[in-house]
Length: 341
Image (cartoon, rainbow, N blue to C red; front, side, top):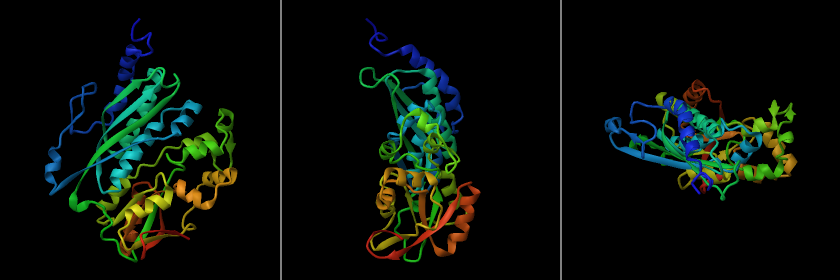
């Protein structure tokens, strides 16, 4: 008896590491110390000394049951973008710059080529956000997971000067809400998605004119990463007063998190186009409108508040970062919460 016969293939692990090295190299920043394969990832904080009062920010998350869709479609090269996005977007909406990311892949059986595809997506997410991929872990769990199954999670660390943190404390009635378009469902609500739609490969490969692609392609579209857009806004000299990453819990849970007491967000549902995949979800699943807005991003991946006088500069900065902005509402006085009208 040996470890391989028990279900853990050490040689496959070595092969996975070799295959992912080329992807990891693309994400390197000058602050990264050492190479891939050490017991820990090292990152120099020398540049942080230039800040008046540096604050470290962290985020950890996974892709939820969206990984099940990747398994069914046997496409694993974008799910890593989702894992990175879920972490770095949280850091960005607090005013931070993501510095580095580490991933964790749990699998029933280590298939090196599949692992390399997953990490390829992770590396792409890191490139989009400017974070270095400085480490990770791939763990085989024979007997705990089926051989063809895996789960993916990770965490990111970022930094910002305390004076640049986005806290919502300066919010006031009259401030304008700007939303940035999502790519679709992103990485939340997939337990409901999988109940509504037929998850057989044939159904997912069906093309829909309304979507402009197959159902599987629409659902698997990776989460947008808004780090560069928020940096572009900052570089334009605009102060973002509050910011919300629209993830699990949709609008009703996430928008209030950006508000201070005594302020209330008003969002107009007709102020931006809702991607057709959400209409399909609502109709096919007979999902009530309030539940849709309480579960999904409904086409807006991030919502931020700026002073009325900064709206034009903000819109231009977002467009320069290749994101699509919409003026979606405003802040009013009232009990902390959100009105969708």
